[in-house]
Length: 407
Image (cartoon, rainbow, N blue to C red; front, top):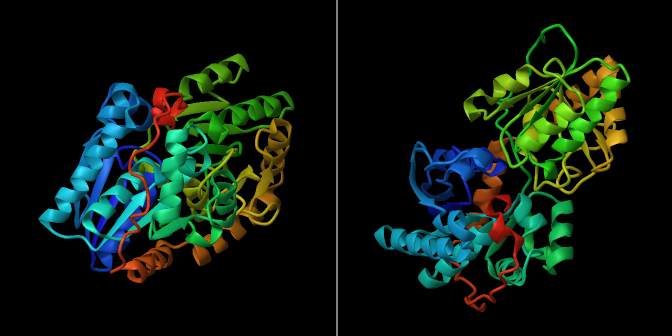
């Protein structure tokens, strides 16, 4: 099967989308599919600092096409970049016809793919992921109409879990029966536990996008409470994002020095397993996820996990069973949960063991990749649903036009 995979962002951008795409592409190529990836990327200094920028690298067995987000970088002009995506998909189909189009994110990539599919007469699969499902469509009328069209007219919709389905349907009025739940997954051969960890204080590890919506500021506030209570720990914040400087400033204001918290910055994905191997507890105080790749990586690496009762997390973690969960934004509860897992060796080991067992049983990419390919087989040969208006209402008030990197 010839598959066109349209990515919102791929490496060198560090995000859950990049990890998802990398693993899915590997599975598709391994199953014998002919794959082209068209990926947007930031090429400006600001976008590079926030995400990691530049054209996507070569992927074994995949034709890779990078499209710089010129419109977004200039003035939040998503429409310009959507037109470029549509033109590229149509041109690639003319060069060598596709069977299925698969987009990450409903907007802008899913919307661009829906338009291209109608032009060339192909079925579409759209993966609703991350902030795309949480915020896009509530930001302005332009994006609400586009998201509703994608949710109603794509041939198939993939989403990570039931809690995420509920959120998207509540916000945008989508039909829950339209969604196929395919959970996140992790490369369990790449992320594995270490037999012994280095001596010293328990090491608390935050890895991913350094963004207040991921709870990184709450993590720092909780660390200050633990320090004041005399609980020993070491903490690492790994990654880049829009709130790196705000996080460093907050740590300084709370008097947390390098002996207590270190910011390690951009981590090339090849080095990430070694980072987990140095930690004891993974901390993800997130406000919402699509399906957290980093939590699955931590589980596969044999770490205890402390996170939140939030969309996307509640589909893979259960409080007191394979993790400790608190309400998003509840800093005292987060500090208490972290203190428990630091001082209670038996609890920490039990959470790690149970999380690892479930991760290996349920969240392997071999299994999840086959489920996605089964969706391709189901819709192959279908015609696109053309019953949507291509012209969107223009709403200049959208907050993502001013800060498109947050989308």
